[in-house]
Length: 238
Ligand code: GLP
Image (cartoon, rainbow, N blue to C red; front, side):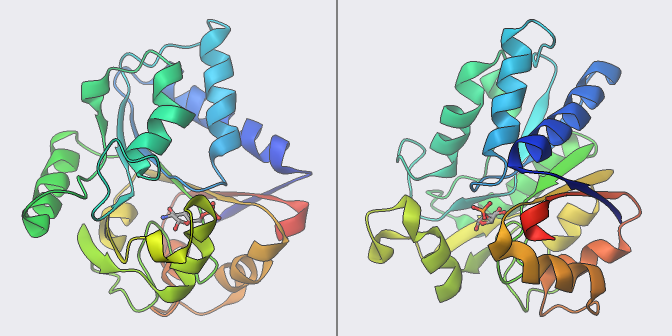
């Protein structure tokens, strides 16, 4: 794992966006794996800026998001569909048909998971998968205990994860109890992984990732096995 330490959140966001822009300018049909949460917001702003300056077009880019809450419609302000539109898609020239997130309102959630896996397979391979790091080591919504061999699946969110994400909702009771997430094996099949870690709160999780054992109790530890991981972290997290 290649650890890049930078001064602050802004620098982390810029470095991350340069890596993404590098891929888009080199590859004719790049496939990006995207994440939500607070951490990648700055990176999305940098990508929007590059687009507005005319440096880049996203017309040939395909995206797959890691996860979506179960039970929230695409239009719900707290859905990851809405997050992606608001934070990135509405501000760039990406083709809506080429952006993908699991449908958390699908009648048959298991079937939705199978379909999502198939869509990723049809696209070839995710070139760069962006990841944030949960306080408990989750990646996507793969909570501690998730088998490393998991594919896209429905998860029960841990109380601590719901608590951590409650800040986006009007209260803890509004935070969904389930989500659909890409599995750990699905994530590990990406060509490259770009993990962003920012802020003091994430320091223990980052330390465990760097120095701890490989264990399903700490999902991010699987990244130790991936041949091409870049971690960008600010001073506070390390
Ligand atoms: C959420 C998301 C993850 C994200 C993580 C960290 O639960 N499902 O994909 O990486 O939390 O979020 P944040 O960046 O807000 O700390």
